[in-house]
Length: 77
Image (cartoon, rainbow, N blue to C red; front, side, top):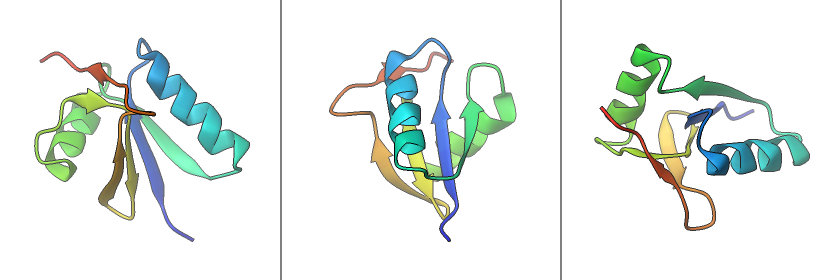
């Protein structure tokens, strides 16, 4: 089974929408809040080549989606 990771923030409504979609489809995933977890923010930027828009969905170490339905939130430094 593929390993899914969701990188987002608590304040971003699009992160919540992606989380709900993943749960609705019964996908197992690990979620990281990149505003409160500096190491997760660093991993997200490395995996996504510097992307600052969340949510980011990663499957087996590769970005498969940035944003949710064309929308996202910018993570400040």
